[in-house]
Image (cartoon, rainbow, N blue to C red; front, side, top):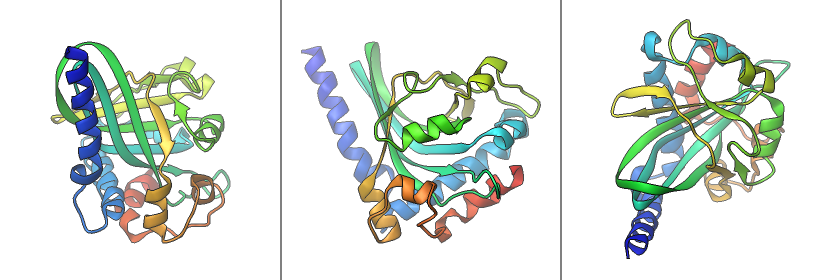
Length: 227
């Protein structure tokens, strides 16, 4: 019975995410704007922010605002967000592509909350994996809780392996997040609506077939500080 209740809660959570977490005439434009606000707010407090040197070294960034986690015995997570990739030669950022993040867990847990999730992707191999389809954190690429603060240093091991550094912000607290087993997938419909045509994540992030949307202005303002 408890399992059935838990599954029911997770199903309800997933159905609500698409329609209520982001409320706007164009929710995909709002998603890009919200991602910029999340990153700007995080970096406004240097002592609790993502270290500048990691921004300069990363190859891509993923931001999932208001990712919903809930459960009763069986827990689940679901969110929609964006990924942007840095060009090796120009150091400029690509237009954002829409992705989802989802995962589940078994164990005693009850209740729910909305959490902002940020991933720094440190190598090209991980980006290529993301563009192939479903990408499992911790299996398809190493993932570790990222350090915070102006002078914090990431572990040498993670940097050498070119893994993914993960962060979360919930109830005002920003910290590194241990995030393994969650699956990141490109959102075809979100990209189609955002750009007005069928575009894959690869075409947006690697091939430059999408124009930078105005809604990404705040994101670019923050990211361009660390090129």
